Amino acid sequence: MDSSYRFKSSSKQSTSSETDHHHHHRFGSLIPRLGRKYRSLSFDSGLLLIVNQRFESPSPTRLVMATSALNSDRKIVTGPAGYVLEDVPHFSDYIPNPPTYPNPLQDNAAYSVVKQYFVDEDDTVPQKIVVHPDSPRGTHFRRAGPRQRVYFDSDDVVACIVTCGGLCPGLNTVIREIVCGLSYMYGVKKILGIEGGYRGFYARNTIDLDSKTVNDIHKRGGTILGTSRGGHDTTKIVDSIQDRGINQVYIIGGDGSQKGAAVIFEEIRRRGLKVAVAGIPKTIDNDIPIIDRSFGFDTAVEEAQRAINAAHVEATSFENGIGLVKLMGRYSGFIAMYATLASRDVDCCLIPESPFFLEGKGGLFEFIGKRLKENGHMVIVIAEGAGQDLLSESNEQSTTLKDASGNKLLQDVGLWISQRIKDHFAKKMTLNLKYIDPTYMIRAVPSNASDNVCCTLLAQSAVHGVMAGYNGFTVGLVNGRHTYIPFYRITEKQNKVVITDRMWARLLSSTNQPSFMKHDDNHEPNHSGGEAGAMNW
Ligand SMILES: Nc1ncnc2c1ncn2[C@@H]1O[C@H](COP(=O)(O)OP(=O)(O)O)[C@@H](O)[C@H]1O
Ligand SMILES: O=P(O)(O)OC[C@H]1O[C@](O)(COP(=O)(O)O)[C@@H](O)[C@@H]1O
Ligand SMILES: [Mg+2]
Image 1 (tube, rainbow, N blue to C red):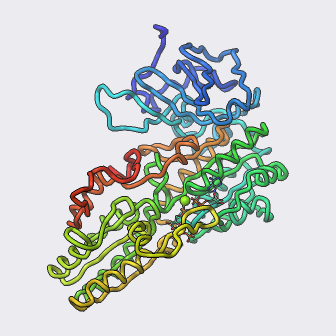
Image 2: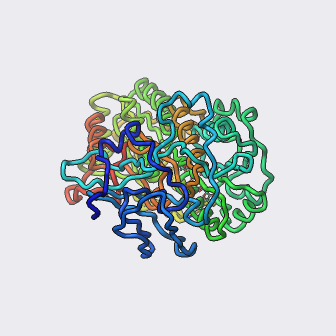
Image 3: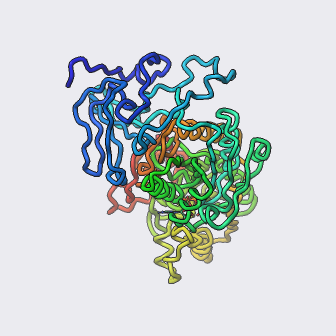
């Protein structure tokens, strides 16, 4: 490596206020933007573009790439000590010499008081923050925030916003803050709402959005734009984007929506359009990987407390009372786990990641019998995706039904387990079991204060990234900092509760429920699990 190669220490790099903002701008092409610090840029498709080279910037060198060669690539930048930046695409990757403009925020009185308001081009955020002295520096994501130069003239912007998939508290707040961010910060005047999810691009008219029309919407649950499952037709969607002259697309949605956003972006890049696509991750189940937590999750957990309280009141008021609450969570039990930890009234929490069984030693029935004997009542929280294996064993009904988006339709585990418990204890004792299903109540509410702040920052980060020319990314909080994450990192797997992590151990110790490990079970989780995100501390 070049001996004059300069690299900031990791501690310095994470402190943006210390970074040098006076070095020259690098906006002309991909190489200059990567700056002098990186030694290689490789694309996973096998096309190795630059290796072991020191770039002086601004550089006259232009990186010439065939658009087609970029289609499935990953923009990976490596540096010393195992540093890896999983970068997001940028207009300058596939559009030759895109014009740039000074960021209008530089004249905004509100932000002018902030020292070094603009984010340094080289700021990145580490994925893992717990390290050993000899750990490699590891994967980083590009830090979100406003850049000194933007790739859109505000007068030319035609932005659109769409919400897809299931409801989640905070959707309206994100819509509101994208609209307000675009208009107040960047002076954008043309913002369209796409109604009814992806199919709205080609099956519905658009609605005009401005700061006045969205002023109060954050106080309402749901989404003012409407949403849907299914209906993703990439060609029709991109045709509609082109026909309407849209050049910024904000997609608020979960794992399915982000997969949809990724293919829309691929098609846009294939057609060589100067259209930005940004995803804002929405998942009430908190099943999107990498990010610390998703907006609406906090609200959902809080709302679930009301159902758990009701279950507790019912359970404690009757002899051998059992309050059973079913909460959302198809594949990830975060809502159930956090609602249980928050409540302290829950005796048993069942989630999809932790298999359980009913009969025999160490099983659920034995535990219920024991708790009722000790306390006279019991509260059980079950995530909707828990015990699906047991259900399909005892049920001939087809389990292959899917919703319009292709998500497997689950059978009602709450009703099933209620019946099984009643049947089991029928001859032994009088049970009073009350089943509460607050599924849609916890997601149809407006977002709470903390989620509103979370939504605001995500929306603003998305707007800054798009204005700065980044494209094909999802915004997300990583270790408390906002970042731009490539779509593939968000969609390649689901975030799950890792039952061998401390958080699940804390839950087990707070409820003192059995782990439901049979003797022949090995102690590995039965799912791929994934990296421990912040919710798995
Ligand atoms: N693999 C995919 N490719 C393209 N579009 C998809 C894909 N998966 C889901 N979608 C679309 O994304 C939208 C939302 O997906 P869905 O699974 O219902 O909700 P969520 O985004 O909350 O996971 C739907 O319109 C669906 O058709
Ligand atoms: O009945 P619907 O509208 O399909 O939604 C129910 C599902 O939505 C979820 O909240 C998750 O859906 P998303 O992926 O859209 O966020 C699940 O937990 C739940 O099973
Ligand atoms: Mg989903």
